[in-house]
Image (cartoon, rainbow, N blue to C red; front, side):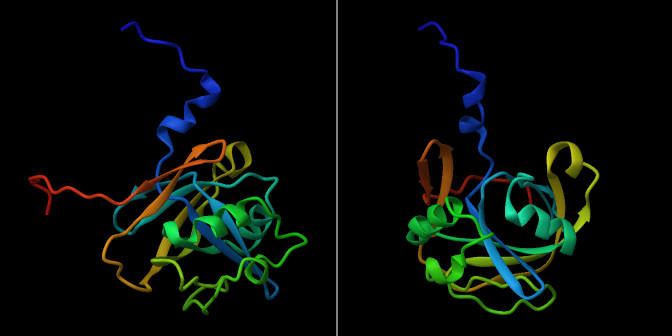
Amino acid sequence: MAPKPIPLSEVYRLLEPGPVVLLTTCHKGKANVMTMSWHTMLEFEPPLIGCVISDRNYSFAILKKTKECVINIPGVALAAKVVGCGNTSGRDTDKFQRFGLNRLPASSVQAPLLPDCYASLECRVVDTAMVRKYCFFVLQVTHAWRHFRPARLKTIHHMGRGLFMVAGDTIKLRSRMK
C-alpha cells in the first residue's frame, strides 16, 4: 500500500504526549482549573515537566504571575468534567462549582489538589525561557500525592477534534532499567 499524506495540521493527533490532566492555579484566593494535554516529562530527578499553555488562557496569566500550580491526573470516570473544564473559561465561571470538583489544600502551593483524580503533583515554575515565544513552561514537581489506587488506571488521551483514547491495558516486558 502506498503511503498517504497526512495534513500537517493533524500531526499533533499522532503524537499527543500523555494523559489529559487538570491544571489548578490560584491567585489572590481565587482558584481556577483548566484542562491540559500538551505536556512532557523532561527529567527524572528532580522531576521536571514541560507544558504548553496558550497565552489566551486565563490560567496562563495566573501561572506566569504566581509561578506555581498543581497537575492533577484524572481517570476516564472524570472525562465529561475534564472536557467541560476545557470548554469553559475561568475568567467568568467557577469551574469547581459548575462541574462539582472537590478540592483539598496543597502543602507548598496555593493551587488546590483535586482528590477525585488519581494523583496530584504540586509544581513550581523553574524556567520561563520559552514562555514568550512558545508559551512553554518548565515545572519542577515539589510534592506528589496519590489519592487512591485503582485496580486499573484508565487515563484519557486527547486525539483532537473531540476524540479521546482511553489507556489502561499494561504489559510487562523484560527491562534492564532499575
